[in-house]
Length: 174
Image (cartoon, rainbow, N blue to C red; front, side, top):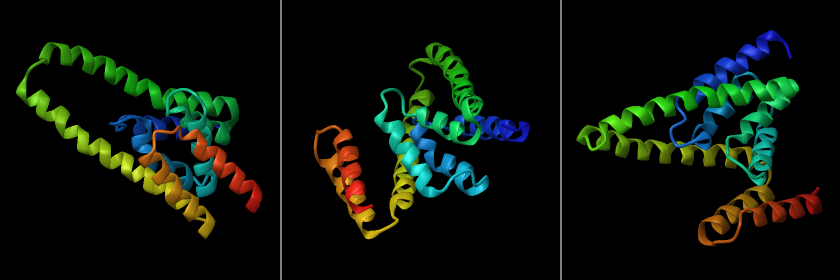
């Protein structure tokens, strides 16, 4: 991995981490912009595949950042991307939790926290649209995306069933 790519990962994911209200998935559109549109490190389909792989793995959703880093710069890229994405927000969360304890019960703090809810919901909805666009490569993929969305929304079954079904359809079609 070249020093240039290292710093692009540090500054790119470091900046994204500072606005990750709602978690790592909430800033997925910005991650897409960084790795697909700005740097061209991967295609829309590669982005969607790495996201699907990260969702199938146990653990936090932010694991997808490690897969992006791995794709760009191997093990060092993975470690760099994960640290850049998690360290700034971890320090901010620690500082905010200490401050919040001291300011508990203040009216303006409750208003601020409630105001962040629609921001997080909007960011997560944008993430879903980015992933759907990356998956829309044929009518079969669009149909599968729509059916998957309805399945996850309307049932209590594990989303892993969707991944299994998608893998079967992909194997039969390709």
